[in-house]
Image (spheres, rainbow, N blue to C red):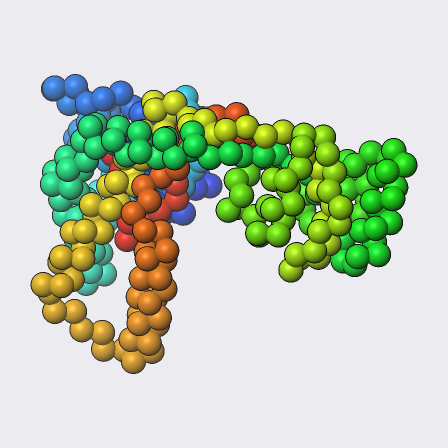
Length: 331
């Protein structure tokens, strides 16, 4: 417990002021599911800390401590709760509960608690296993029909540089070595390796040249808005979706966000919201336009599971994407 207290001494203030929300993957590591009797696991001057309180407390701190080893998460949260109750009890003794500062905070936290409770009781049940599976099947079918290639490139600023490198490649110099020496973008550190990608992911001129190559073939210099490229095709294959169990958590979160957005759209349409600050009005209008454009561009896409062997970071079942207080709470 000494190490837990040491960690707390350096992080308690920061996490106490935070509003991070816990991901389901982390929640499962913190404490087992609440039993029917919701047993008491610690007592602080008469206050009983139950498993349900530990689960709720994780919303406040674990999301801000991603590097904490899983085996330390449960005792960390319990120790955090012990110190929180000690300070809360001291605050009551010293009359803090009667101050305006406390009452303002209480109103804020009450609104958050009501929002979270509404989400868990009303919105979360809207997303069913059948709906998640249907979304997966739809997007997985799209992935399976999409060709992906893996390519390397060397990016330089002028046609002359590209032609000089092309000549050296024809003499037998290694593509990777020349990429590390001359390429102007971040892939140079990896010998020009761009990983796997689909045609729409690259600018048209680059994709047209890359997808026209045979495996092992090197292109002539190609011009794009970024400069001059020489491309080497490493591999090509049709897409393959990640297994359902690995991505259903991520798909569920996307569907939940859509449900929340639907509820919020209806609430805003039927409510009177007044922005009194003139500068804030301007920013709000700009943000609303940007949000609408983004939504229009996204269309009805749910999620596209990437290739299981494409060399990129696969979409996993971990729901730990960062989120603020304005987004949906998680379990």
